[in-house]
Each structure stands twice: as structure tokens, then as C-alpha cells.
Image 1 (cartoon, rainbow, N blue to C red):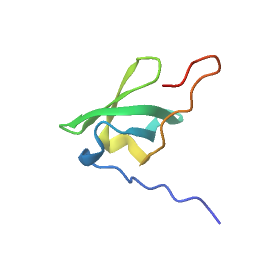
Image 2 (image 1 turned 90 degrees about the vertical axis):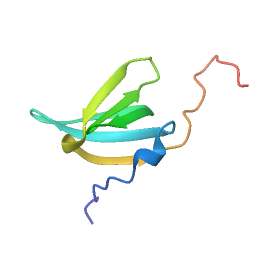
Image 3 (image 1 turned 180 degrees about the vertical axis):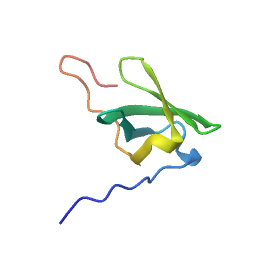
Length: 78
């Protein structure tokens, strides 16, 4: 059985952690982080390292909400 690519996020998910897959020249690229905004066909996703990724809606092939990231080794939990 083949995997289905589904876009299961909306503007209602702003502020939540998401994973995305988008088309880029030569293949696909993934981004995981907090959906900061979705305006005028552009999603802005803040990755854990602080990088802001801009994703054009028409390149999106899959996306969904994911649980919070597990703590990194050596980090204390709140």
C-alpha cells in the first residue's frame, strides 16, 4: 500500500508544531517547526534552531500537526 500525501493543516493551526513536505527543484524538502503565519499563500514555519522557513502554498504536497518535540539530551524539563 502506498502512502498518501495529505495537507491536513489550516490557518487555524497557527501557533502549533507542524511538519511539511514541499516540492523543490530536483525533489522534495521537509520542514518541521511552529507555524507562525499563513498569509497571501505563504506559510512561515519557525524551526527549532530559530530559522524561519517561507513555504509557498502551491509547492506544499503534505502537512500535518505533530506533537511537541522531545527534550534534547542534557536539557532540563519544565
